View 1 (tube, rainbow, N blue to C red):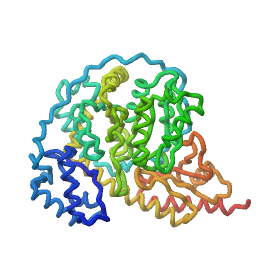
View 2: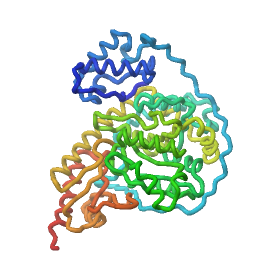
View 3: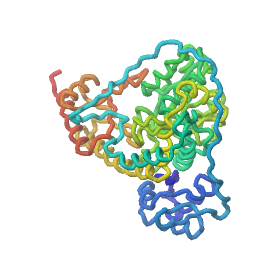
View 4: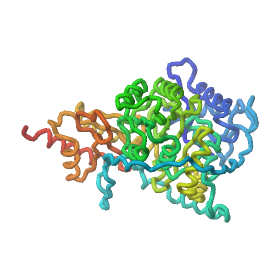
Amino acid sequence: MGSSELLIALDRDSATPLQQQVCDRITVLVRSGRLRPGDAVPASRELALQLDVSRTVITRAYELLRAHGILTARRGSGTRVAAIADGDVPRPRRTAPAALAPQPPRSTDGGNALWQPWEPPPTHHPGGGLDFRHGTPALADFPVARWLQALQDAYGRADAAALGYGPAEGSPALRTEIATLVRQSRALDASAERIMVTGGATQAMDILVRLLVGPGDVVVIEDPSHTVLRQVFGCSEAAVVPVPVDEEGLRVQDIDACVRARGHDPALVKLVYVTPSHQFPTGLIMSEARRLALLEWAYARGATVLEDDYHNEFTFTAERLPALAAARHRDTVVYVGSFSKTLFPALRIGYAILPPHLVQPFLGIKWITDRLTPTVDQDALALFISSGAYARHISRMTRLYRQRRSRLIEALLEHFGSEVRISGAAAGLHVLVTLTGTRGAGEDEIARLAAGRGVRIYPASGYFVQDPPSEPAFLMGYAALTTARITEGVALLAAVVREVRNRPV
């Protein structure tokens, strides 16, 4: 299979030539086992784009690697890690993960009614409105024909077992492909046996709440955070405690104080939910120091960290940190991912990567709640990934989203200048936009006036449990809008804001 990216960084202040740095970094990946014999590496053009260097740098590095026997190239199969590199060991034969026998989960009680938070309603525009809704990928650019081919191939290969009640943990083929994906792009080396395929990331979180949290326990969430998470955690009888984030991510040093301020003992914290790669909704990236502090805090308290790595595939800066779960976390981190934003939400395929001691209990709950997720569709996704179609799609979408993100930021600065603040531009599919100088106009009024001009924007205050923004702030997604539509939408929004600013006091 191919990967759309490699987790490597270059030191541009070093005296070592860039091509030698690329050669050295890839050699380290091979020696460490994160790239294994037979794995495909990105095309020179794609890796040059990712690292923001000339294509010549990459082609020279690949030439060095081939000369050293690290890489090999064949017409039609691309550039791959050599079958046996110097000092390496032969790649173990891929075998299907062993079947896991479900065990009954502990008894749970639905408890209190859902905590019903604020959430903007979904919108549909038959006429193609200017909707800056966040979290919606560029569905019009999805390679439907290639996906249909994967589905056809999967169903053509399906036998009676595949069409029956498959394993609750998910397709063995897909779990194997996910293991390779996260190893290459997120530096997370996990066996397929630790990977559970779920009905989207939300199901994985719901199962974890049932598994880890009981009455009287405490769940820590980021503030601000997505309101769906409040619903998921609010289903339990645990106390949900928001802890503020800053430019470095969750304020780990404030967890104990925030829990005590709500009348609870920090020793009762069982789960900490974080979005370290792209904090929702601010878009900030958790610093390495804060990540280490969180892992130490969780280990000392016996708590589990739930890492929601949504949008990690779409990062627009050269600096990328590995997944939190890739660190030495001593079995304190559960990693949750999804294909909803990279492919399409209706696919409803997510996954959880669990510490060994949580695999059987998690599987027991999943077996009862839905018995299985559609195995043949998962096999189709595995084929889509192994064929390289997934990597090519991510590469195309990254280029497209970079263009649309740039156009949105440029348009906002053109129309608002110093009277706009933009957060979260480094990654993801939305930015957090704060408008200043609106003479007391609130978010709801601006959103209502914009809607009257055919533009949908989404107030951000509802995502904050405490200390909402003092000035109007909005989540603006750009992935599903062309650059022309983004330009038009921002111009209409600017007209609304001028109207508000110029009205008599």
